[in-house]
Length: 395
Image (tube, rainbow, N blue to C red):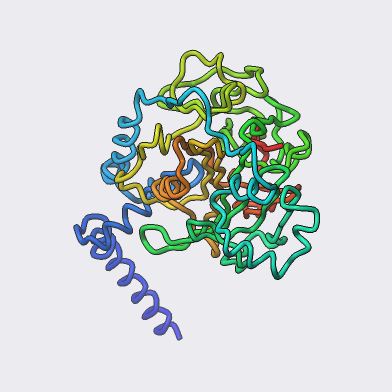
């Protein structure tokens, strides 16, 4: 019996020695393209969140980490000094003439008309009160569900999950594979009334945070996504202390930190402005985060080589005024997460003229009609996500 135990111990020792002397150096230093892509993905993903950086720093040499992360430095340099620039007025999708039906299709221009008309033929109850009162919600209560088959598509080919004509909101399912073939799933909200998009704050601002569902309820909003980051000292933050600039409904609550971070928010003309602004008087609602994705129609992260997959939240705006709110789940079996590059590609596909990342990770969540419709990833597996200081809301 003792001999068997010794043989097992010897076998394990030999296996560990092989791992340390052969496999470990190979994985760290081989130029093999396949291994290199996965090594860089692992380092970028681990270093992309403060709470998981130890997964890389504990056993990967700092020079290798710095070489991989240098791509992020290059991306940040490319964004230095870039600001949003708009024409005087947005070309809002609000036709003055035409039937309610034609106005509806003009406003929701991304909606594939043939698929929607086929849906309405099978479900005429949704237009019983007319096109201007359409209220469709096919999302359900399972936040991890994906690959819906509602029969309604956008002109971009994505599945439509909800349409509310009164609030000017359409919600679309976003699914796909990132650069290494791992799947992601999330929701994109298209908000047709930019004047109704604003920054709401938690009740205990600067002391304790709130769930996005609570902020949605507090402001009687229809839709909400997480916005800025927050102070989280050693993982013990209460979510109430926002990081960076904060302005809500015309009231400036905290100054900017700058240093590469971007102010992201709406001015009095309902333009989404993104940049390192020194004069913030024109903003009505804004937060601060980074990086920018698209400025004045130019994709600033394309070709950056960053392929780390994380839960992500982003906001953008089309030239016609439509506000795009994107939340993609991550670190879960139904969705591994999405890279910054892919977020920009989705925003481009929906013709974003300006777009930026917001806080991600376990903060990423979208709330619609009073409940979470994405799946936040937290250590406690709390379906409401984390306590946060603020959110972009839609009335």
